Amino acid sequence: MRVMRQRMFILARADGPYRSMDQAIAAARVKPQAVSHGSSGIGSLYHAVFLVLEKKAGVEFLHVPYTGGAPGLQAVAAGQVDLMVAAPEEFQGLVQGGLLRVLACCSDQRAPLYPEVPTLQDCGFDMALENMKGWLAPAATPEPAILYWQTRFRAGMQQPEWRAFEARAGETDGYLNGPAFQAAMEAVLNAVTAAAKG
Image (tube, rainbow, N blue to C red):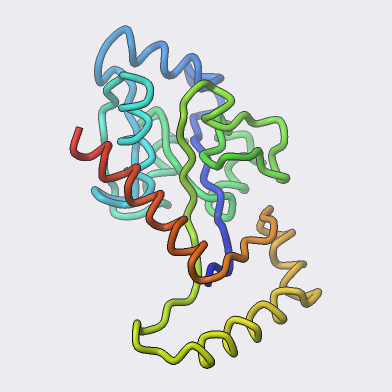
């Protein structure tokens, strides 16, 4: 079962050359690899967002991998790379401090925390990727046990403490049952695999 959906966003330096996703894409179309993006490493979900975006937009970015999300965000804030994908808990302080600008949301819907920020679909690209957190069980787990734990966790997710956590993280209810969670994971995997194969 999926417990949480974690929205990801594309960010740029607040005083950098790109004030919108359209501007960054336009620059990448003029000159391949003229626009760079950091990631938390080759093959990470943050890297995958740009792989898919390259295919959907018909552009080529320059990928600069880092050892994690924090070093990548620091590089964007310092002007060493142009763009980066990250989750709100990683970048909110830098946005509030005026160092980073949020250009786009990678989900299929705008985020409550940043309602003015367009999705990539709003920008004209048929894609949506999210980081998902959930529980998995071995394939041989008896169905009554799965239903028991699913019911228990779902009840816990209705509690005020969990709702308050979601609100602080800028997220909405991310629950999906087992089959729906499997389908959501497969959709992300299929999109990334198709982009990686070119």
